[in-house]
Image (cartoon, rainbow, N blue to C red; front, side, top):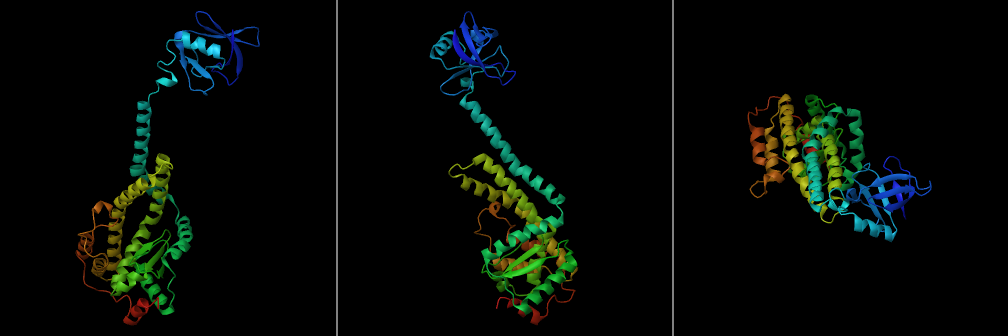
Length: 355
């Protein structure tokens, strides 16, 4: 008789048992005068996962969660000598590396499918369900970091007044649910962007390259398009979910950051081009409602972006090719029929908003 620990598979009770090796392993309660708890045929016994210092066993003839744990060297030697299928089908050792690899690949494929297809779908649904009142605090939270990253806000009073007038004219045609809050940041990069909730930023580098109010109005109307479509909120949800899912896949494995950045860049480019095209169409609609042309914006894009010949694969670009955007904006663009958005003095004040 050899001492061991037994779990019957029906409860979590830990029983001290004694073993008898006859034509099978007889498992008896050590505290109840040898009361027989189970009897396992030798050919049904399989090795189960357990600590290194113990031999943990299961039986194909017993409940699935039943376990017998041996720490006594003599009992372990008896089992090793009498159980021909100890490492056979159903044992811990029978789970092959190949099966683990296949399971891992299947899990990775499921995560990739969720990143590529599920997160954009989920982001669209959640964006539509999110109240506008919840969106604005997100932009407010990001605003200080944006200003710290790009530079101080330009606050020359006559320039701010001209900017607010231009934005007000555009808002009469755009009718955004969250009224836009524009600002010019002192930064040499020629760019503009919008945050969730209606905050719209012009960088002074773009203002320097702008030659007319219509050019600048087209860019602002384009950013209004992102605000109207709630692209900032949609991207925030999508990228937050993507980061979480890809983190599940890679953890802190060395080099995973490079894979993550490359995958995110391609993913964002694919969805970004659609959003940019829609924002261009929104800009054209707003400008035409005001009786102003959108073609000047195309000229500004061409001056800022230059030619696309050396731009690399278009898949990695988060905007449509400049030539394609220019052709779309100029197609069917009517001549001016409405009043100028700013008079010459106001335009010059706006150009000098940063001093």
